[in-house]
Image (cartoon, rainbow, N blue to C red; front, top):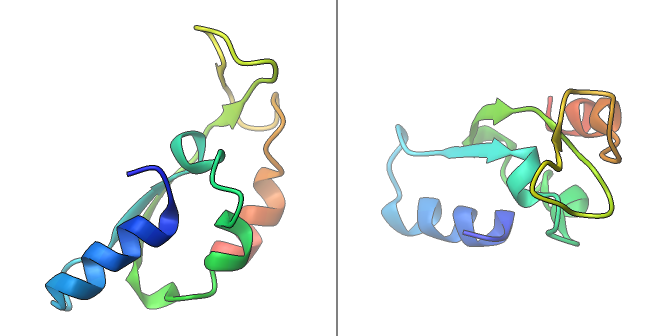
Length: 80
């Protein structure tokens, strides 16, 4: 999946209380609607995997938290 909306669509189609989303910030950071979509179904966000993203992209662009371009603190606040 490449967007948070795609993940939520599948979760909503399955429609079971024990099915939710594992949000990996590094994989979904390219989703332009990620920040506004976080409020769509907060009860379906089961797990948050946190890492950072380096720009420009390269083979070695996964970064430690706070060493890249993702506003991790802001997103954690929204997701929490």
